[in-house]
Image (cartoon, rainbow, N blue to C red):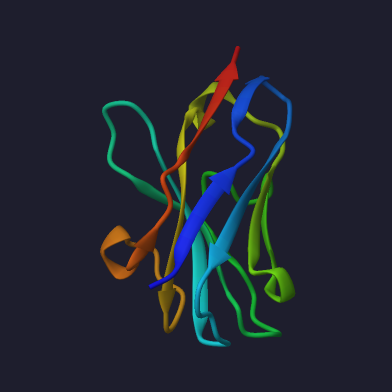
Length: 124
């Protein structure tokens, strides 16, 4: 099992930016996939972005964040990042880092490892 720890959340004004980080400790490999999900109050946890540890693969994004968020990884340091730009109040949520072995997936049930979450609040 891999332990995941998120950081970087906070309060930001609409139009601003934040960068989330997720540190993974434990065994990873080229088949490792890491993702970001988010959960707003009263809503289900939803997919944000994901990418494989494998070199040369492309990232996947939800339509709601495509063009504004960028997911990146540093495999040497077992780090995952989420650069969030042009934030709106609709982006307010707890953001979770998740991981699995295999291919990129977009549902919560497909991920086996989860972090504790970090709060992102966007004020209008």
